[in-house]
Length: 258
Image (cartoon, rainbow, N blue to C red; front, top):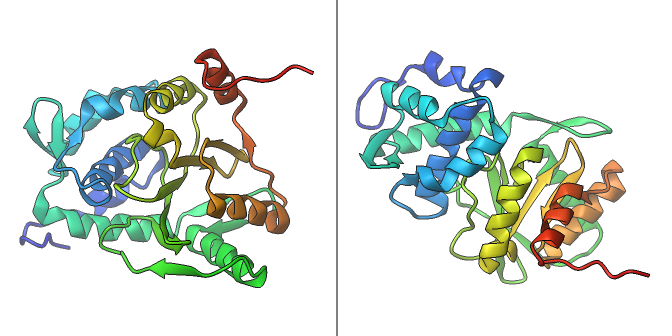
């Protein structure tokens, strides 16, 4: 396999990222791709992902992961604490990671299925229930491991990630990320949502294996997805308890007594 610029890419080196022990490397690469394609940024800011990386991978040093990616030619430093995937490598890397994520098995209480099967099942349920018109947007150049849907004139991004280190949303629309929600990440996530109304109004994290969610949006499509999970798969997505408490502690949520 070669880069678009002619440089050789080690397929074996790329496949190593698909092993569980190299998940931190994969997550950083995906964060860098999201910065380029999803958030229209010229580089990945280490300062932006550092608190979330530490929460998801407390026993791994981010500096060591970055150094490994730099030595492998996957990342290049632009300035202090800012890194980018070489431009000649981005599309090829995105295509390979897209293929990996599309075939990754998701574990649900009643079965195992791929991301594509899950979303196709949701779309079929959506049509069968007569919930309205939904459009699948062809945006493969921008989406790595997911789909883009248009519903009620709004864009909805559905993505699969091992973890979500780049806590951000696209310039328009809503973002639903299927990822593990690490208990240690709750405080950092709550801080980010409290500080940024735009983020809390448009971002949802969903841990399918644990049937938990982080969601403060009022989004009809995500409500329908939860209904699909409950009716078809018997999965009731519940708020992460620690997240609810974190919101109470920060004054963003009040529970009425009685």
